Structures are given as C-alpha cells and as structure tokens.
Length: 178
Image (cartoon, rainbow, N blue to C red; front, side, top):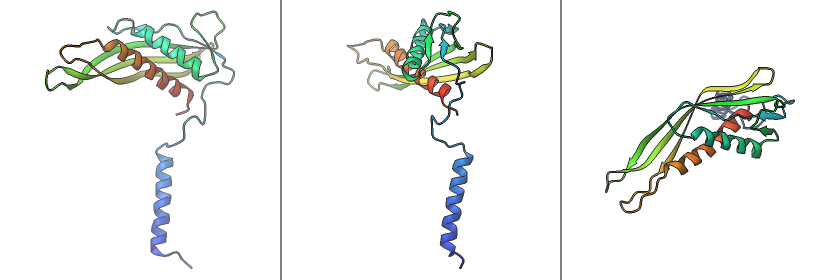
C-alpha cells in the first residue's frame, strides 16, 4: 500500500527541512574542541593598539585573560616564562563610535554603537597556527545619559562592557569548533 498524497508531501517536507538544516551547517555548540589535548598553558601578552582609543587594548587583554581563566582549565599566564604551550596575540586595528539614536528634545545623541576591529591569533609553541581571525569585528551599543542638567561620561563603562562581551565571544569562538 502506497502512502497518500498528503503523507508523501509531509514526508518530503520533513526530509527537505532536515537536509536544509544539515546543509546550512546547523549544529549544537560546544560539541567539539579544535585545540590540542596536550595544550595546558596559554600565554596572553598585552594586545597591541593601532587605534586612536587610549588604553582599550589593556582593557581587552584583561577581559580576555579573565574569561580564559573563568571558562577554561588552561593555565593562563601574562608573563612569558617559557612554559606556555601556545600564545594568544591580538592587535586592536581600529575603533569607531557612531550615533545610533538622537534625543528629540535636545537634538543630542541618546545612544551609540562602538565598533572594534581586531586581528587575533593563537599559535602553538612550535609555530603552528591553532586559531586565527585577521578581521575580527565586534560591536556593542551604549546609552548616553544627557538630559541637559545631569551629564556623565558613558563611553568608558561602555568600553568595559564591550571588552567583557568581546572576551566571551572570542573565547567561545576559539573553543567551539565552528
């Protein structure tokens, strides 16, 4: 007995949906790690700053070190003592801040976007590139508190939040096999 036309259409639809999901690269996160099993120590030197944003490379470096220490079992060092199995290097290429919304009453900016462009690489002590992203672009939104009377500078806290979110994204990207 052959299935009815609606049953065949339903089965065809399910198979097509399954193939589309498999074909587009859908998978669950954290099911595989690309980093070598014999890697135990990561050296993270201070990132290089080629942008015009003062000391942001220090904030980004500290956030990445904190994230690696909290999310992984790797020993993370910030001074090269020769024991590291790999080195995570970063270069802050550019930053930009763009207005996102305006205050209708004052005409001032009420929220903005911060963009950070980085070049990152994780290289083993033997010189093998384990992971790299030469064009890592990250962005975050921040609110500006300015009602005419009370103004406080929001850029620094926004950069701190951006660094924390950036570190979470970077470590996830390095650890999960995408």
